[in-house]
Image 1 (cartoon, rainbow, N blue to C red):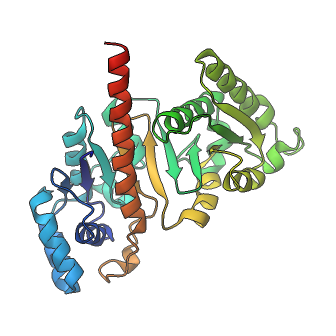
Image 2 (image 1 turned 120 degrees about the vertical axis):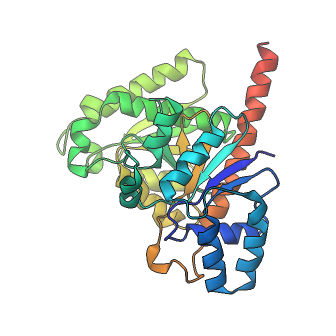
Length: 321
């Protein structure tokens, strides 16, 4: 079973509590590594004074690395250092506070962009995965007013290819159908409500279809679809994934259904990376009431995807020695 490296995220958020809870639940295994501050965890466990926190701390101790009061950015750096070029290991990141992390030295708007730079790849995308929905984003952390300006066919093609490969290889879906959403209401209504579907998104879909055909991949791309129709179709099982044009077009509907069991997956990296799909929740930190479901799912999915990747790589090596 794949080993994982977990980074603590914001130590003043619910990250430390999530670590105590998953450790108490027995989700961490020998060989796993947790990059987190002992002082943060000891202080929290003592303040909570609950059996699960005490047990979780005891189970975390053998797995801990990092300075006693390590910051969230330093923990992320150390975690990535420990996973790059280590075959079969997966990274699970607890939520960071982006503003605080930037103050600590992070030069990126989020985990996704930082991890892509560390991995040396320009081909990456954010996938939100739940038990029902899988949504990849063509654009990520940019202001809404700039989406139409920055959206291009290359971004859509990149997201579609990465989603297709992941559905085939890691999620083991034999013949996935992927819906590509429009940008405008009603997918532009044939140009009446905007022409990006005609000038950008439609041509990108044609490129994706040609790519799948050229590589003999059993993947179908459909669209442009109105977003308000694409999500119900995906939920009903008519689609295996969606390509959304911007952050909240994808994450709004996704979190409505998967707020507690959704997982953020970074596609295009040489290692598997997952994260809970929620934020730091500082308003409830230290109260012992955080919902651990998304972190639990992120850990389980990370192991499953990493194991799938190792099996696929091994099979390819056998076929092409």
